[in-house]
Image (cartoon, rainbow, N blue to C red):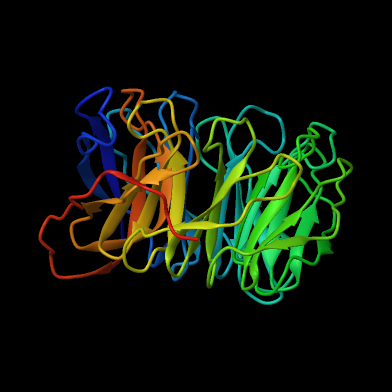
Length: 368
């Protein structure tokens, strides 16, 4: 399997919204080899050279692949590390405070665990150390949930969200699990109520469940918010300039945007079409106007919804992905031009479609 990379090319620094289509393009790079049946990709600087590297979780080959970045949008050959039996999700952080990037992988194999691979100075990784979570872990995020300045883990699994508090030396305490709706799929950490304590938002079969953090590693009872049918992925960002975190949620209809009220609650979801079979979303300022935009992995390519800065988005523009259908997106500046680039893995191959871009790039108020 391979990882594909697109580099952002901004043709105009300030496109005129509502009058012309945004002058934004992506230039394909790669693909670059990874493992077998990749399911997730993340970004980190593993060897401390200032260039963004990639790590890919490979389900069938039961490992993770590290691809060192050269700083020009290309990558070195993958180096593989065993990381459990059925990797599902991967995240990068420094768990032992040594200044080197470490890795955590959710391993969806009975009874369910996460594997932690501590990083070395030369960019290689130590052997994986497993920690029990709950059954069927599908998503893992990191954050300081108890205010001790040590990074902790939150893992979405069949039983809810399991919290593993970090000890600061790369090891973690036993998991404590909180209910988070039926069949949690994806999760994001952020301060949704403005109390300077990290909270969690979880996409599940019933919508989005928000667990407000108490700041001591415990969480309040989850509150559910509707987010369209079959939410499977979510990301947080600030979409309307009010300095409150909002949510972008992938569902069957496209992207549901839930604007945050700043108290841990959210306004009703507004849905934006994003193309066929949306899988994941990545938030970044892709056109350089200082506003958050959305990139969505869909069947046959990537759709980009540019933000208007008021919580609404223009209609999706489609970018062909050379016959592949991305599942997971990672954002980083891979060629040093200070513009966000996208990396994804090739999930399956289709006949090469004709290059397509949606003609209507005017503002779209979305659908309630």
